[in-house]
Image 1 (cartoon, rainbow, N blue to C red):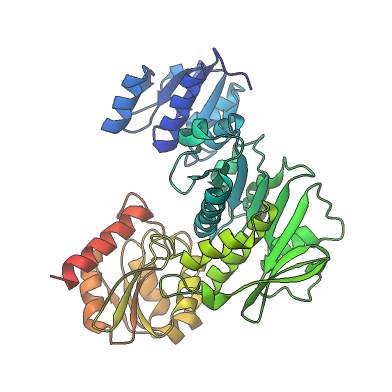
Image 2: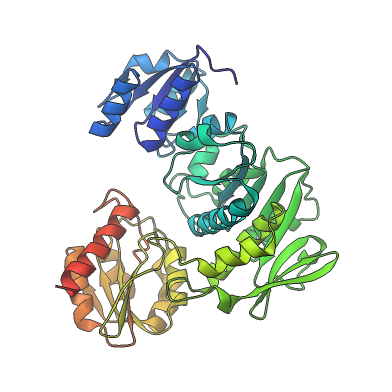
Length: 465
């Protein structure tokens, strides 16, 4: 796309919108930024410095004077601004799409309902280790919190861009093409966006491979029933190479393709040439990085490493030194024999389920927030098995108390701080206090990162004073 001289409306002045506007201007386009709310002070300063015109607290008719539009992923298709653009036949693109047009680096695109941030971080660390030996750099961008557009101009052809992708970002990325794509899993989430239709949600995820070519590779989770059915259907034909991974897929017909498997507690890569032993899970599992789901994330990363031609030395070095990701079952503090664990990234029940399954012993659970249509019956047996006290917070605390009434001891807290104090009184040596909300954060916090940071701050302030 030649954007020089093009008029572009950027809808949304968050980090990705501002980064896209700056990139567009540097590439010769005429950008106009429109934000429904107030633009933060830093955003205003950047726009003024770049001499980019903008408006805030509403969208005027000026947004429609555009050759195309870059739109924030959080704006749903039903929004009036989207309807207005479509009525005028103005193309809508994601920030990811725009950045990818100018990306010289190799692209590893990673999507899925759960595990994509951890997998992205592991892949990034492996590429960093390999880059130190082979003279290239790795950039971790996208949904992980660093806009692709903010880094793309620094990338050279030998570098690797590890791009975490949400379904929202993929919706408006018609030409995006990764050299290697990963789908970690597909389970119910964001179904309000997709009218409750899992197939529509899955179709958005499948856009990650829509433009891949014979020289490209897709890595997918063979343990996920939806993905397994999709990629092994009798009539399924794909133009790219496929690398599956799984802990349960040995002997299930996956072996006609390159596969990363868990054989006992050993990771192996199986190809037509035979089995290659990589490492034992005990070599990378630790208190700050544990659970079967994280083994699955490592299997995915090994598949990517092989697709990129990365050897054993950087792969093993990166995995052995990996300590986990902030807000993903993050060990915050061990005090009086109790581990305090921040799992604020658990914004859905599947992520909470993974955290509960990873517990080494019983725990006190702090959960709740903005409910996303959760069916708590799906985790009831696990909660009864693992949880000695459930403390409910946020908008959903009434629903949570009702769902688990009579199953486990329950308390409701009016604040995160009150919940932490309740947990500190109830937790026994050898137990954990697990903060795994299973809900969105927007009832009390701007995002799950702020929620996790506040949890950690409160734990340190209240327990170490």
